Image 1 (cartoon, one colour):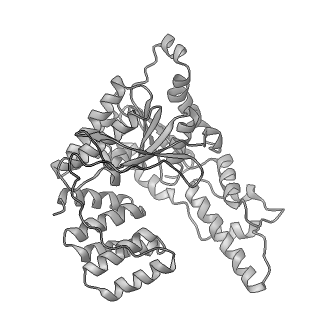
Image 2 (tube, helix red, strand yellow):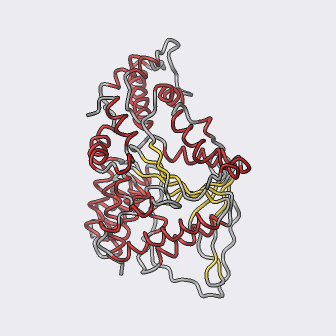
Image 3 (cartoon, rainbow, N blue to C red):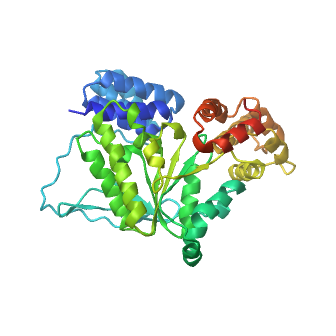
Length: 425
């Protein structure tokens, strides 16, 4: 029977990040296993309203509809899944752990879609290799590939990268490398890309850990998985271990109703203490959209004690992002990107990508009517802007209230300064 603790934690995580398809599909699978198929189907339908072509959601919907006895719905979702190139999988069945003397399957490293080396992280427990929990890669991007964001780069260099590269200078100044770095800010502004670029800058491996990699229905398994992820990262040093959506993994224990989830937070605290005190070459970065939900113990010295605000891209960064997404598309020679940049203040990188998609759709519509390919123009981009507003505004509305009334020790001074400078309140 599925542990209600895990389901409750996943429900909380999905509520905070409703666009995370993998997380929603995982929750749906657990609900089906717990005999709550109608609820699973409801959350799948709500998620597909936002992402109707997401294969993981369609597969989860097929499984939930079959379990709920809605054969027609299951058949319809299956037909859409096949049309999009997916395959309807059989419902998952629980797998019993292999006996202690069972040999572990051998898997060769495979290149990822961008040609980077991807090596499965493996761990040892009880004398045998466990299942792969995550993958480690060698990023090829560096901070030079991050457009703009000079303040973020400067802070990263002074507090993190500079001391890493200059051990003698670090020793002369007594600069400690204990602790990790917590990136926070509105969604879609590149926190994960920055973490990957830090790994590339250091020439280190990179692995990302999210709540779906850790949470398990069985008591004690979440803590074991988290420990294994840290252990296998340590065996692959130099390595950047990236804790994505750390507010879900390290939520304030005062907000948790179930002791099982508290055990995961306690395990994370223990792992961070171990990293800070005895391990060389393992660099912990974490990201969150909700720093006020992160347990305060995680931000104590020696843990995630440095916070870095990742704001919406500035003007130079917005121009780089727009050029990147317009690359390989037919673009008018007189396209005035500066006019677009000037009207997209506080837009996230994800907003800018969507803006280009909308403008492209308009040009394609005309091209289909005329039978000739038409270039994307400034007018297309400015016209698409009328249909968009920055998605970051809702985040700033919430963040401002926390910054105003929970600004302990000037923790959110930079955030307040940005809000006032851009008249967001």
